[in-house]
Image 1: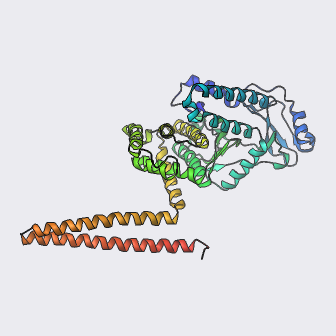
Image 2 (image 1 turned 90 degrees about the vertical axis):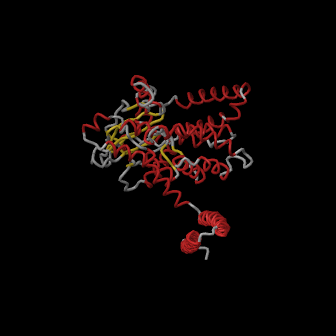
Image 3 (image 1 turned 120 degrees about the vertical axis):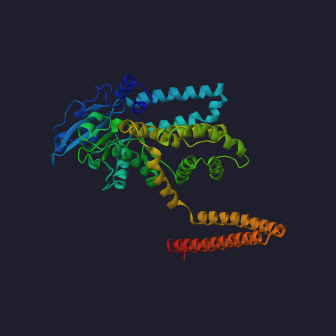
Length: 446
């Protein structure tokens, strides 16, 4: 993950970190011919040709081998789980788990933050990644969602050859996303490429509710075709994040409230979603949020880090005993990736500008009919109260005025306000009527 943040770390650090993606020491215990035949219970000669003994790439959890399908000569890759990985992960995770439990004895703050819950969620993600049947199912979901997409291509999986330890899929020939030299040489539209990457992510989150949560450069490629209108290719769906409608609302409305500097809205949102008690000191909560967010606006919006904004919000809400779902931290990690890659491709990338219409569109689609009606009624009552106060004020003031000309002017102002009130009432009626009509048309209740 850290290897994507060229805006944070030095070139030498990034270079060393990038080796962890696909240049890990080869697992020599894997004799690929025997391994595949044992796991698939199929003779290599019955379905494969040109299987290379040396892995094409080697990562922390799996190794990749190249071959061709015998029946149609199509090029494929075979992903196999490393032989020693399960044992090593069990030892490491047990050690970390025990360390967290011991630290709870000495730190109430750590226990309050529920660090163990986050670690156990991470442990579950790790073991899910070891099951290639789960990854196969994830790929099927994303292929369906991005079928005929102009933004993203997901390689085909050959289900009949897959097992828990083996994944067989179409081999792709794209340009690695971090090979900027090649992308520029081929005259790719770098700005559009960066913007499309952000758009893909936010569409996954807000339209589909499931997102690729391991989008480091080793898993992201660009199609060689059509450089002026680039298309992404994504692989390795071992880690995916899922997000509920409630969590989407939390993110979406916080996002828009921040852009509008509406800190009170952020407080109200946390209360409405039941993340904090309604008895909380809302003024104090709002002040904390304002203090944290205001420094961001001392720079151009395009320079504001989206991931830093989320970190700041999570940090503040923890002070008020808000427990954030561990899944949201997986999302935050992915945003960290996306932002790092996007800024590397196109340093002037404005992530907020791309995300805003997607977020607003989701809010409009998801907003409950009764929520909209409730908001309209609330606004109407507020304006009606203010109009009445204003009218009473005008009447008392007019009585004090002796000058006839001034009286006429104030009378006209009073009539104007009355007309505005009537116009507003008509608008409310029409909007309510249209909403009711829309609601009846789109439900099968009646």
